[in-house]
Image 1 (cartoon, rainbow, N blue to C red):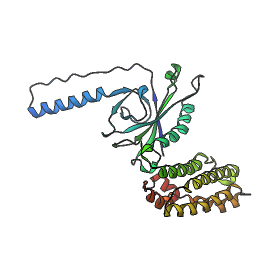
Image 2: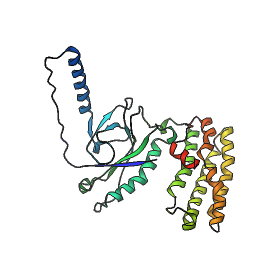
Image 3: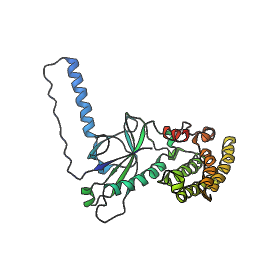
Length: 295
């Protein structure tokens, strides 16, 4: 999942109102001009400061990609829009501005976790949606700004509807997603920086231990979820957990590789599709995940 960032600014916000003069033109042209003026007026009326963004707001950014932003257009979620605020939090730091990289690192770590609470089933996200966040600038930090707004924003095009699905999930769906998401979070957040096991056996073993622990938690939760396909998945993941445990306790790189092959393939998202279908969850593996396990 890609993550983009954009900065806020503390500069004063001014609205520029353009007056449309309609001269001696045809009726259709007048009608088109009036419609255009109405659309423009509606957009101006919907402009809000990025400082006022609230969780659940659906919006259209006025700027594309990274950079400073001052205003966004707040729209009803039933209308086509580019993004939705899915979480916000404050950075607990009263010292001097730590720099763009440090603030972004905090958002990189927190926003995916917080977004997952808003939309637990990331497989159900519209195609092309990525995490984008609004963070303080050096100038706004000096005025006390510590807020980070996490959003799901479409990289191109729009989508309709709210992505707030947490409240609509059934207990068994929530249990499954909590455990499953925990497994993949453990895998990705503990990914060693070195490319090879030989360079960082300790790091890869730590990752394996984290995944094994997350699998144990997931398996415990699945005990209370009924369904033939869920039962099959639980049996398969029990064996997979054993492979991750072997990788975590490997004496050397060769032993790690032997265990890792079965461990990695055991958490292939494709293998969860029958259980997801049985539970009424999304069944299309996100493209990024599908590419990782296909390779």
